[in-house]
Length: 265
Image (tube, rainbow, N blue to C red; front, top):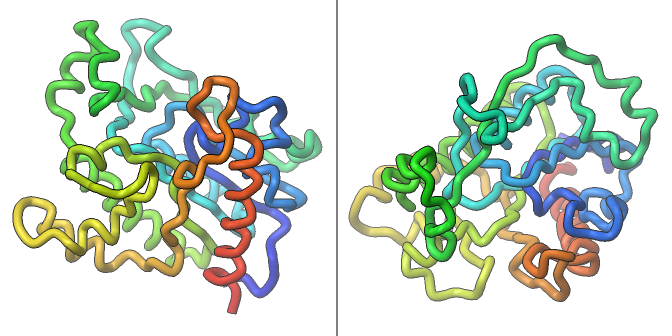
């Protein structure tokens, strides 16, 4: 565990860790943390599968002092394979060019890798976005995706990543970065962005979700606090939906508090 605040931090997340909807990369919470080197892999549209996979890949190669994982909305899947339409897929480059928001010199510390692959980070399939995708190539996902299955996927990703980090003595912190969208499907009555998967799972007394309780109970809440960048939005970005500059500043303060509490002896 950390004995002092880190200098080198890796972040894996979705658009809520990116600066795409802000005036400057400096406005993102990832760059408001104040650390000298931030390898930010916040990619718009990322799924939790993608977030977990890239975190393991990066941390195994580069050993950051701290890894911060920003879990995203549930109804997103990653598929890997040969694209039928290049517009459907993103190109994954292991030179990590998008990390270098804070300091161009970081590039010198990133070892390039020769291989690459295609990935499709997500489709939205839940209320209120379920009608977005009507094309045939998306209908299969929209048909088979459901709230409970996606929740199971999140818990499995969190459990795998937690254990990987602990086995490899990698300091880490999990934070939340989405409404999860499926909270409506679970009849959650709380405020937007306040749904916390671990607490919710504990309250279920019947049905399929009870089968994931033994695994969820093994996840250490100390390192997955109930903080969410969209729970207390005070302003919005250029798209009118993502968190704005002040919300990012506020969230950065919360994250730093949790780093102090959760990762220091």
